[in-house]
Length: 305
Image 1 (cartoon, rainbow, N blue to C red):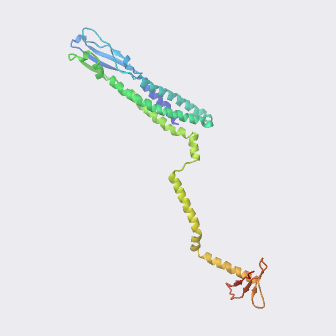
Image 2 (tube, rainbow, N blue to C red):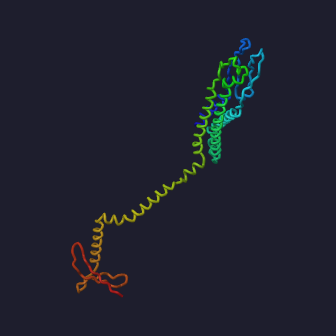
Image 3 (spheres, one colour):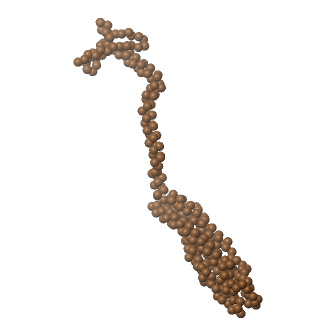
């Protein structure tokens, strides 16, 4: 959404404030002979700020002769680079807006669209940073080159103590300062959009599908697994001692088992209890003991063969 709304607007503001700028300064040269003075010398300059092509004709205060003076400096490369980045960023943001709205399915098909968008977004973010820094430095040099104090030093008549030179008008830099601010705003906007474009790529989706755990996370998982294993080993014994009623139920089971075999058996004449034969066809002789209502204690003798 940031690309759709804000990117074209800030791109237009960036190249409009820089590419549409024109400024001027005005100086006064008062000669010792008032009739030879030039009280209004206007110096105009504009984008792309090739100051070496800007000239003016001040008086020499010697008769009515004049000289031609050119300003110093060429800042067209930084200014044109800044404006070019702004124009191409504006065009690409418009193209991206059309694709996002009308060709969303083709954009996501094959993951090629998000990857191209991601690479272009990273490139424009980098270009905005470089161009904004270069233009900020060029603007600082441009202010120094068009400073009325520096311009007056170029005039031969102003280097004579008898003459008096002043600046009657200075350039306004608010528009160019705003262009630098818009340049860095565009950098922040495009750099922040990198994350949202990256989320649409297959790289982000692959990382979400197979998350990579850190070393500390793996150590914590291993420790928790060891603790769970140790607790599962210690649990039967602990639960046995924590629940003594299980021993009682075990004794009751033995008691019922004794009653069952006692009922199935038969007494012989000698008073011994003979149980059914085992699978080895060997009788088991059980001596009769004290039989109570709740528990039977028996002694089992098995013949060794």
